[in-house]
Amino acid sequence: MYTLNCKGKLLVIESPLVMGILNITPDSFYEGYLDKELPAIVSLAEEMISAGADILDIGGQSTRPGSVRISAEEELDRILPVIQAILKKMPSAIISVDTYYSRVAEAAIENGASIINDISAGNMDSKMIATVASLQIPYICMHMKGSPDTMQNGPRYENVVTEVLDFFIDKIAECKNAGINDVIIDPGFGFGKTIAHNFILLKYLHTFSMLEKPILAGISRKSTVYKTLGTTANEALNGTTVLNTIALLNGASIVRVHDVKEAKEAIKLIRTYNESSNSK
Image (tube, rainbow, N blue to C red; front, side, top):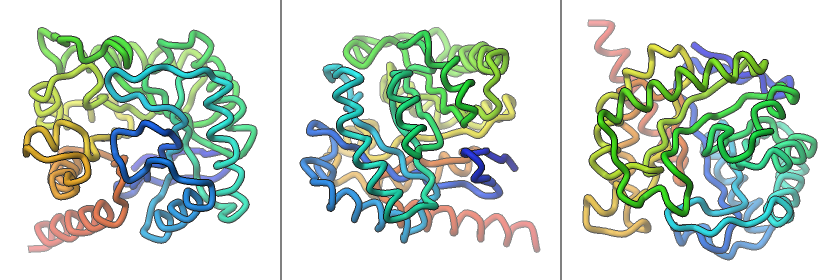
């Protein structure tokens, strides 16, 4: 069991949590989140909370392979009205912000967010880790090889599991030394990995349990799912649920998803399965 102190709101991970994705971008890889106005975004957030989302993860720029960076100012213009509107409607919502800018992190937390989700684990902004430490909020560290614009240009590893594990050993120590109390690790499915790398990480996800940190799995509707199946992101719900189930069975503490209801159902079925096998 893990606990996360989200600005005084205690999030207890007794069973896996669901993080609902709210991409506030005009270029998301998943069409279900394109071109939504503020009322529609708030409505979607309400639907996710009603379906059982424990965390809402708001992102102001796409980090899909080959994406173009936007400035911190533009990112803030996109996300701050959303954070404010959601918390006005649902004050108890726990909001994570998907950003690698320390300036965005600080402003988002000041406006009510309580978790920072950084795809670069502090490597794209040297001030990020110190900023998160000063804010005293949970920090999601993701492994990424390269940057979003280059990460899928032939990524190579001698051993993807040990290299990602070594990365987290160093990064957790860096966060601890800076004063961050709550660190969540994310292997970074699709971020500087081939489909084969992603399946290897998924198969050996339990290995990362030795780090004694919550493990986040973010594989929802990604190309690993739909390219393997020969479909599209819009048709990848069933495949996503299958891979989320494997991640949960292999130790994931949080699943980051577009489809909250289906993720909650997977968690409930796995919990019932585990309870029945323990009570024979």
